[in-house]
Length: 477
Ligand code: ADP
Image (cartoon, protein in one colour):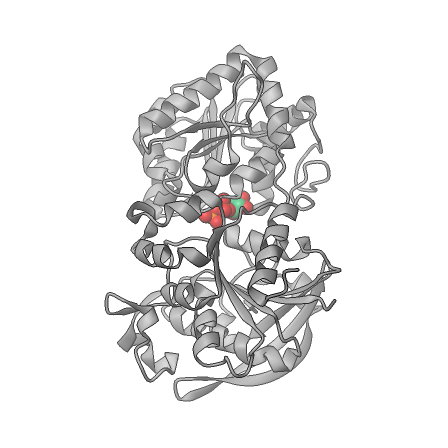
């Protein structure tokens, strides 16, 4: 049987470019598919920030031009193979050779260009996919254009659209972008309160819509979580499914992670070596008996930063150490800097993006705080568990699907959680966790082992995606 050809189109893929969970997913899911049944390739922009260690080995494939407004824009295609997955990079210096991945005035144009380039490059790479799988708003135009403009070119290609975060939809004034969109009509399936909404277009056009956890797939049908698209989600629910993300268990493996001080599997003693090294590294008092609570996060409201701000002084009244690594909203960055300054023996705020330090914190901390307001899946809690760092989470989306309250009587469970988005419920739950740490250390060790053993590798999810790919291409036997 022919292999199923799958092309992932996304705006980031680890280790080339990553700003958050999307990058992790695109960097790890493709290699989890069975190579005897699938040929999965990935296409992302060639950003200026991709490390030289990779770009030096990129091979040029071809060059073509993409019509944007009145201009024909250069599009180079480069290729690189990693872990048996072929990655393509769309090169255009003007759009992508910039220091950051996102946050520019012409964001819509950059990704309109990228989406068209993906559709136009197929003959040049000579890879006609059965499945064109687009991720998040930056590539949401692909399912729409495939259906409306390219169906005759790629008659055997079905499209899948995955929502990694429904908050970011790509909404722009039609007048502002019509010059670059090159559509001479206002597409009704993209119309959103008189603006253009790329994600909405993808939801209606794709053959399959997925999101990254079963709970989130349900939640976004509700106005509280749907960010204005809940009605559309209800409308397309016949083709919507939630498939839980996993983590790359080779990349995030405390047994051989080169970033951490002392490699370990289930050894609590070795984990404590990392803890002491972390305390020393951050210039905190070195003490096994003080629980370290960590946060590694974008510092935005979604991640529950307003709850943290409300009770941070109460958290710091406990006999704990608190370590935050993150960047984001300047108001939260400053609040965290200021509080860390007030508690020099208890708290550190590292306001930066630092992959190396993140691993050291996962390995060296006892608890991982993630009180999200909403969380499509969340990878940080999965990584934390793998490194024996106990998650304390709010029961929403993927956090609800992956973290189960520890029962100290039965010894079952892998973390702590609270239901209502309320600062004192969070505080109470942190106190429960800290209480267990101090009063029942043996049970704490059981909990740590449970967390390390929780299985979140990609295999099951890849199998589920494959099932749906086969279903929509009519290849299910
Ligand atoms: P989201 O994609 O919403 O930001 P996830 O939990 O799905 O959240 O993924 C976040 C990823 O980004 C994790 O791999 C986490 O370790 C990483 N991360 C977040 N902030 C930082 C930071 N400041 N430095 C290093 N890694 C970070």
